[in-house]
Structures are given as structure tokens and as C-alpha cells.
Image 1 (spheres, chains in turn red, purple):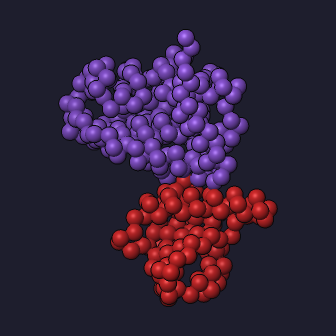
Image 2 (cartoon, rainbow over the protein chains, first blue to last red; image 1 turned 90 degrees about the vertical axis):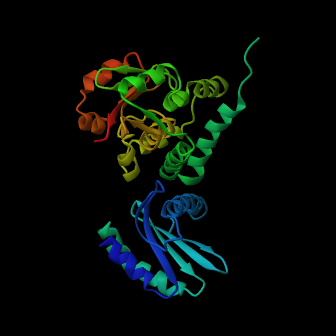
Image 3 (cartoon, helix red, strand yellow; image 1 turned 135 degrees about the vertical axis):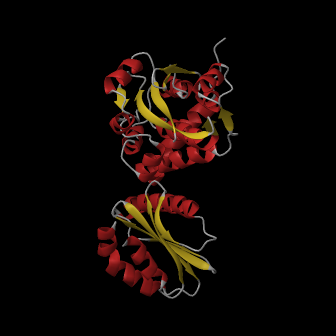
Length: 114
Length: 204
């Protein structure tokens, strides 16, 4: 079920991979290109989530919704769902609005699948 | 003349504290585990013909685990204990300087004792964590054992059974005690004279 949801995300234009990992930085399920190391991505995502989450609480007094890493060549979106981290890897052509809309729509389904 | 304080001991403990403050306990704990696992990759591989030969290497201090954590004592059922925590000196230096360990450490220890995929894989935590240093030491030992040590041509696994804090509190990994079929009473008894207790199983 989780794999199916991840696959659905990779069908969005520009999305090249998706992953669910733990707060401990360990990959749980992923659909990634073969040149992406899932353990490295999960570790990085957990660290970025941790820093962003603390910053969100400190500055806004609120839980983190999403974190975005953006460069000319691509983007990585990190979003906490329950006690897990949802990671989406995109190239520069990705439609971020569409992805965020889908993520908002699918959050409950992802949480249930986990 | 009094020994000079090794600042790296104190600085390392402060780094753990700030990691927890910046990233929260679950992520900081995960980082400690992952760093310990990455460190195990640098250890050279060793092979022993049997458990007695393994024990001999422990006594001769050529065993990679002994080099990392000090000499262990072998008990019946291939249970091993350590009389001293390998982080004892760092803890002492920090307490001597600041009067106690940081409050933030409690959350890291609590998180290390929670079930997770990686801790299941390494057979650590689950109540056997008594300080954040257990989140480094136990995964490091398990990771070195499973990746780098072979006995009789077979891979081995370490199961953390229990651990004792400097204050005397004993933490037991009920999950791994049950899985290995060792009695909690036995682990409790061994921890009367030790700080750390684990067993080694040869994978069939």
C-alpha cells in the first residue's frame, strides 16, 4: 500500500522519487532512482526535519508542515506525517503546487497506510 | 600533579546536548546510532574458528570489540559483561566540571529505548539504554559484530541484555532477554558486578 502511494507521487510531472523514513533517519519504503542512496537521503531528511521542526516551534510556536530544499537543478520536499517523514525528490520541471495539493489530499491515506 | 582535563570529552557531551536542542530527541538519537554504524565500517574484518578463540582474542586485546570497549568477561551461554562503561571517563570529566549531566540527556535515553526498525535490526535499546552513550556504544558494538566478525565461518549477532548507570540503575532489554531465552534474573545478577551485559549468537 505504501509503495503504491509512493509510486503515485512519482507519476506527478517532475517527481523523480519518494520515500518514507523514520525520525531516526532510517528508510522504511522508497521509490528512488538507482543513483540515490536511500540511507543517505533518509539521514539527511531526518536532520533537516529536526532542524526545521525546532525552528518552526521556536519562531511560530507551531508544528512543522513542510521543508523545501530548492536549487536550479531540483527540489526536495520533506513533510512529517505522524512519527515518520515523507520525502519527495523532484527535478527542476516539477509542479510544486500540484505536489503540495496532492500531499495535503493524501496525508490521511499515507498516515493510515503507515 | 592533577591530570589535565581532556576538553574533547566535555565538548563531545556538549555536542550531544546541542544536537538534541537543535533537532529534537528522536532525530538526535538517530544521528548517534547512524554515526556509530558508519564508524563500524572502518573496523577491519576478523575471523575466529570458534568461541574459545574469540574469547582468547578478547583476553589478548586483539579483538575489535575489546579495542573499542575494553575487556569483556565471558559467562555461561556466551553472555559477556563489561566491568566499566567505555564512556565512564568522559562522563566523570563532565560531572567534575559541571556538577551533573545535561537534563536533555533523559529524552535521548527515553527515545533510544523506544522500538524502531534500526534498533530491531541491531538488537539494542528496548530498555537497556541508561544514558545517551548507550545510543552510541550498543549500535557500534552490534554493527561491528554483525559486519566485521565471523566465528567458524558464520556471521554473529549481538543482543543487548542490560546496562547499569553510574547511579546504579539497571536497565533491562526485556525484548532481547526473551528472544535469547536468557533469564532476567541472570542478567540482573551479572549486572551486580558489571555495567553492561550482552550475548553473542552465531547465525545459522
